[in-house]
Structures are given as C-alpha cells and as structure tokens.
Image (tube, rainbow, N blue to C red; front, side):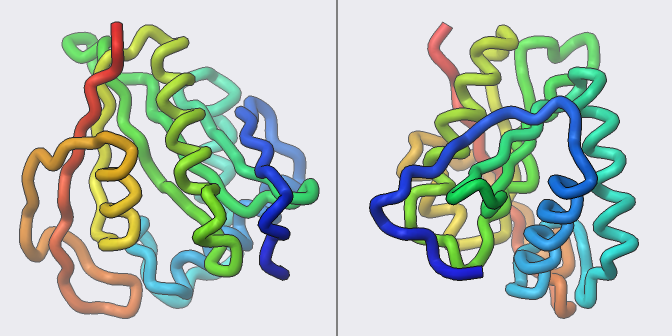
Length: 179
C-alpha cells in the first residue's frame, strides 16, 4: 500500500456491519501490524484464517452494539482501526476499554492514530462513558496516548509476549472524559 498523500484527510467512521471486502482489509491491516511487531494479542506468523476468525467476532460485537469498531480510510481504503469495548460488567457502566489500535505501517505518522483516538473518545461520550482504559506495549503508541491526554496508571513487566517471542512490559493508561 502506498503512503497516503499528506494533503488527503483520513475519514474516520464507525462500522456496525462489515462487508467481506472490509473484513479482508481489516485482516490485511492486522497481519501487517503483527508482522511489524505490534503486541496486539497475536503471534507471528498470523494466518489469514486466524485473522478472519478474530474479525468475525469483532463484527458480531459491532453489530450487537457491545463494541464500537472505528476505521480510518484514506482514498477509500482502510488503513487504521480502533475498537471501543462498550459492554462492561454491571458495576462499571461508566467505562469502556480502548483496544486494538492499528495503523498500517506505511500509513503511520500522518495523524491517523490521533484521528482514531478523537473519534473513539467521542463515541465513548456519546455512549455515556466517562472513563476509558487501555493497555500498550508500544513506545510509539505510548507517545500518541500521552499527547492525547491519557494518564499512565502503571506497568507490569513480563506481562505478554511480543509477536516474535520474548516478554514485554505492558503499560496501562486511562483517560477521564468530560461529563
């Protein structure tokens, strides 16, 4: 995939029903991120079948409203995504989990991550959420989260494996949303 033109503004939108072409594009995005070393719950090599199974589950949650799936598109092509897990235990109706922030390696450093974060925070507000939480093992993502106003809650060494193997530290962030 070519780099997006600097002047082209990404379109961020919520998907509640996924087409076969969108699932394919999301699979390719996930595989690209895992191939690039992103610690997003999968090990290398990530097969297309495993990616498809993952996105099928996300699609079901998005259709039910349990999860908001946001995608960033440039030129009509999905180059980023993030999920907002809205369904929480009954004693935590005020919060949501931000998960699987994915931006294609060739589309990074064009503001897509920030655009996805802003849209996710607005979706959370629209759903009546006042607290967001996330975890990350990525220094690059951590810098983005800090620039967006997220606060470090703590870190756990050796929490997960990197996609190519080897333990990594996971850091937890939170963001309180204006009421």
